[in-house]
Image (cartoon, rainbow, N blue to C red; front, top):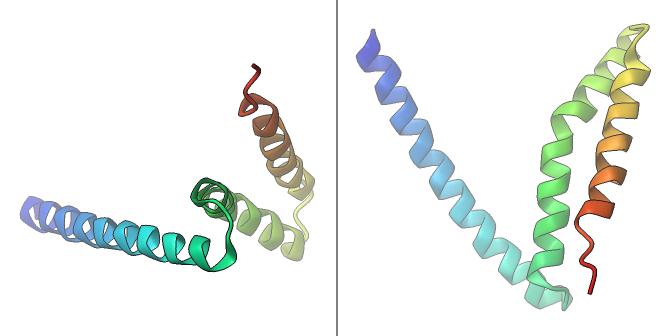
Length: 91
């Protein structure tokens, strides 16, 4: 049983490495086509990817009629707006 777990971890780690390599290549190509910066596109894509789990929980709980679904929506908004201020460089 431990061998299967270790083999699974190694296999999916290799898939993750290949996926990140493909993501970088395609982001660079998209940045060249749209004349936007690499950092801008990377920030937007990574920001969307990190918000997807919370957004999925918020939407599915709202559709299911859960009473606390607004907590998830508020959490998403607070996290996004609070991170905007911390990434600004002051000269």
